[in-house]
Length: 341
Ligand SMILES: [Zn+2]
Ligand SMILES: [Zn+2]
Image 1 (tube, rainbow, N blue to C red):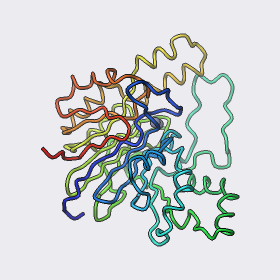
Image 2 (image 1 turned 180 degrees about the horizontal axis):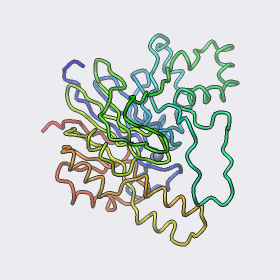
Image 3 (image 1 turned 135 degrees about the vertical axis):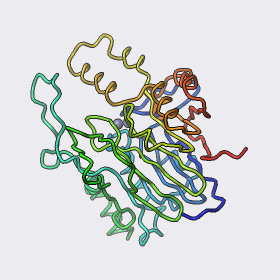
């Protein structure tokens, strides 16, 4: 990393969490989770939720300046527009044949999760020959699924292959920390570096989002400040470790009153299992503020908001528990890592 006047900032491209399209509320219109980390003319993407391509063009961010895509975990609300970005993006990336966009995310889970104790019949997984693909395999399979279209363009229109313009790779979890996808998905650990160039150093840590494993939080350190992403997680000490003294923490938050209301009159085992997932895998507004306070972060922004159509008052309660600068950004807002005074 080299120091210069690059004014690093984030741009919220999408701030809603969850695999669905939220109804637009009056004061916001949140789309799927995705955030740009902008450093000078270059930028990096964290997650690729629904609508990311359109939001990038609205934000004036050109794909030609995209250095890397970092996936926190492989839930579809974080990955669903990876294929559209890569395929529609071919036309903006014609000069990147020798400098492909890196796609970096979790590797193959290695095993299926345990069956829910609420199951009454044995569930049937999809793709039993490859039921838990990691980032590299997922990107390959997404492109293979579109081969008819891509090959027409490659052969008839002499366009580049997405495999020339994107290079997908899996994050390797350090040995010796006791990680196991089902038995110990979030061991206490130190952050480890997954990417570095002249502008940023990106570190990762395991977070707690069962049954997803591995699931990561990311931290971008620049010469002019740092930003840390929780990914999807319940409260975990690992996030306090990763976010220590960071300039800006983007943390997920869920409104558990909404969860209770959604499942209040549902007694079937499927609904109960879905309700259980929210409690063991996501963070309340209050706990997001607790992480920020314990880590001594300077600014906290809540995103990956569930439900995406909730009014801002639901989220602003976090301000009572955190004494730094607090944000509930809408989509397409900019937050500088170190705001100029
Ligand atoms: Zn999510
Ligand atoms: Zn998730």
